[in-house]
Every structure is written in structure tokens, then in C-alpha cells.
Image (cartoon, rainbow, N blue to C red; front, side, top):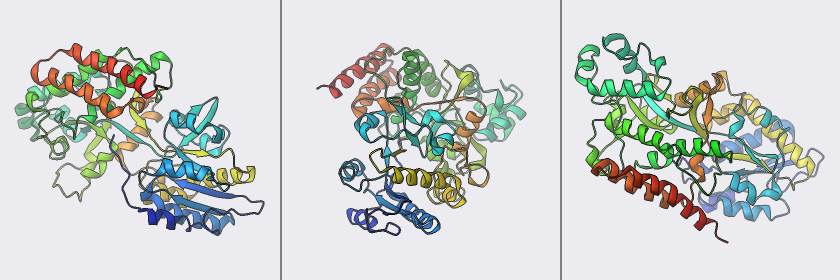
Length: 456
């Protein structure tokens, strides 16, 4: 998963932020009946935006709001230290269900809160021990990015097109047919449509800079459907997996590699640039996430010719429940409220968070200043995400589709497990190795690392 946190704050900045609270010194709290708010912020790059919001709210409502931002990579250490203090954070970040277990004593049930009521996709919230433990405050999504302008051109001007409209691609069967047809008839399509494509799918690199897309994100679709069958938490997972949908994984993977111009025997060489293949309008499809949207901005420095408005994103259709599948949507950013705080401070905290997601200034700060996609029904119109791919995630939800949870977040010893899967996947792809070896690594190594991680 591509990380978006940027190391912007040194320890000195973190300390300085502790004294940037509004109307109070550091973590001190208002003694009035109005209560007070103390946020321990997770994202260093959003520090100034939160400081500005805190001041504005304090000036408007007369409520003390303190924002402390932990240095990049130091959040958990800082949180543990701050929670031990008398004046502890009233808002803190939780990344997953395992965090809920660790901080169970501090979790306030948010089921009746306004922020939960406004959560547009409640599958993003974390539930634990019968409580709504934390509410997602932003999200990312991934799927198959595609050049809709080229596809529309293909449908209109190529006489032998296998679909009549881009909207006909609603399942894996159709996507396979389209990708195969495009890749097999590149020259004819270019002549009929005036395009210069070289392939259907961009290269599926198996080098370290690219293979996470498949050992993480593509594998996550298999895990999602398997966890759904098991009835377990979709992001916490379980210790044993069966590889139930690995045939589906294989089918998608074969589509990627068989409908690309990339030499399959060299996919681990690091010589391919899938982003550039899409950016230069050579490829039609490219599996990746909404963080790629900015790369195709008009002022991009790489000279890409594709226009942002010509790109869109569809689900990674898996041949399981395609009719109901949306984009893969997830986050490691959830607001939790400290149950050990005074009730007046809890109430003040909930009021502050409601203001953030409903006021014009709060919503503008989230979407424009912080550049985040917010999963609340209040972020519409002028406050909707400016990220076209993220907008598609919301559109699929509006159309009744179910977002695919980030089940890969449950991966034990993530780097080791992924490396153990990529090795036989590379053998299978580049040297006609056995798919059985991929399945064995996928299942057996999961159990091995899970047990290793959970040893007493």
C-alpha cells in the first residue's frame, strides 16, 4: 500500500505543536462546563490545517481545542505516553481492529454519535466488543484505472469491438473479452481510432517497486471473499485460510500478463513503468489506487499526454460477486474518543468532530487543504472529493455496490509473507513454474506467520 505520510515534522515541531493549542497551554483543559478537546493527530502533513481549525472553533464556540501532532512514525509511542497522563487525548487515531483490542479500555461507543450517523459507508468504521469503536475520517481506494476515452473511441469506431459501451464492462468475463480483443488487435484499433496503444493492460511488474500491487492489493480481493465466507472481521482476518478463491486470483493475474506488451520473462527486472504506459496512452488498463490521480494532473512533470478527465476506475472484478462489487476502499485513519475522559470533554469532543464534518470551514479544510477523501454524507457538492478516482468509489456505493474491505491489512508479517508469495508467482509467470507452488505459499505461509506473530 502506498504510504502518503510525508516526514514533515521533526521532534521539535511535535513539541512546538503541543503549545499551539487554542486558548490553552499545551494539554491543559478548560475548567468551564463547556468541556474541552484534545486531539492527538496522526498525519504530520495536516498539522497546520488542524491547528487552524482548532483556533477557529475555539474563537467561535469558546471551547478550548488542543491539537498535538506526533512525529512521523512515532504515533503509537506518543499515544501510549499521552494516554497515561491525567490530561489525556480525547481524540486519537486507531488503524485496525487489533488496535481496538489494545486500547479497549479507552474506547467510547460512537454508535449514537453524529459522526457515525453521517458515515456514508459504515463498513469503514471499526466495530469491537459490541461497540462502534472508531469512525473512519478519510479513505483511499484501489481498482483498475482505465482510459475511458480510448474505450469509448474503441466502441464507436472499431467495427469489431466486443462491447457497444464502456458501461458493458460489469464483470470479469466481459473485461477479459475486451482486454484480449484490444491486445490482439492493437494495429487495427490504432488505424480505426487514431490511437497509439501498444497493449491492453499496463505491465504487471514483479520487482520490489511494483509487486505489492499483486501480493497486497490483488491478494486482498481473494482474502476479502474468503473472510466473508468465514464470517470473520474483514480487516482483522483469521489464522487459517484455504485459498478458496486462488483460481480467481490466477484468472485475473493471467489476464494482466497475457494482455500486456510486457515480456513475461522479465517482469521482475524493474525495467517497466506501468504508470508511464497509461500516462502516455499506450495502455488502456492499469491496476492501482486513487493516489495515482495526481500523477496525471495537467501540470505533471513527466510529460504524460493522458488527461485526468479521460481516466476512471472500475473494480478488480474477480468472478465471485461482480454484480455487487465496488472499489476496494479502506483506511488506517479512524477517530476514536477516549472513554476515560470526563463526560463534558467527551461531549465537547463529539461536538467538535460534528462541526468539522458539517461546517463549511471544516469540510473545506478536509478536502482542499488536507486533500483527503472523507466518507461522510456531508461531503457533497462543493465539498466532494476533487479526486476523480475517489469519486468513483462513492458513485459505486450510491449505486448500491459493496465496497471491498482492505482485507490485506490482516496480513501477518506482511513483508515476509508477500515475499514468499511473489517468489513462486515469479516462477509461474516467468519460467512456467507450477501454480500449485503459489497456492501452497499463499496458504501455508499465512498460517506460519500468523502463528509466529501470535506466539505467547
